[in-house]
Image 1 (tube, one colour):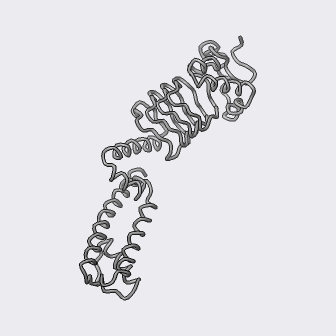
Image 2: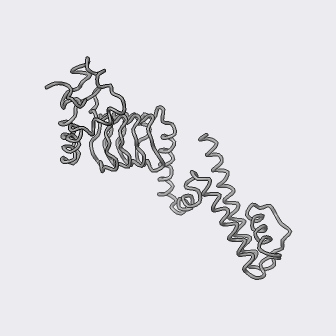
Image 3: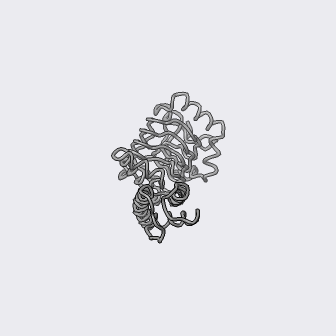
Length: 278
């Protein structure tokens, strides 16, 4: 059996670097060629056989060969596939589209994901010892909860590593302090959204301003804008010459001031996090 077929795939059970080192340069293909070969008859047949066998390891080894010791899935496009608990160890996913895939509890030991698309991909609880994951496309939905991050090679992927560490911290807060986690999620997306934080500050200031205006005999006010200004000064603890004239007004002021102190502390935390990340 020849080492390569006409569609640039290495034939099964052949490790090109070991068995035919003189050919390794021939299949050092461009990204476009690597991706297009999966639209060929051979590529479609490989995917069909692998899917029919429920992505089993044996089936994969029977349909593709190895490139530098790794099963050659370079350039493969399988977005949204369910690969939960599948054995994908020692696989080369270079320049592949595995976005939105479910890889929960998958075995990815010593696999290469360089320059692949992993936006929305779930790696939760996967075994990723020795995985290379540099220059990938990712987003906030790419998840690494339960993964041993110390075993992953994040060289040239520092931002992705920060995302993964943050996700694990969030998961810890959700387990230990669910109410606090809920508040952080709603108020600022766990410190990742200053826009959401600002929105809720404005909503609180406006809401209390309306309360001061609409509830009779809470403060001395000459209209909505006075009430809104008073609400702002209470929220940021600036102080105002407006007088509180009822017990209910004092209660509203105390509640708003407490929330304002808490939000100020959250703002400092957000600023520190952004400064460190930058």
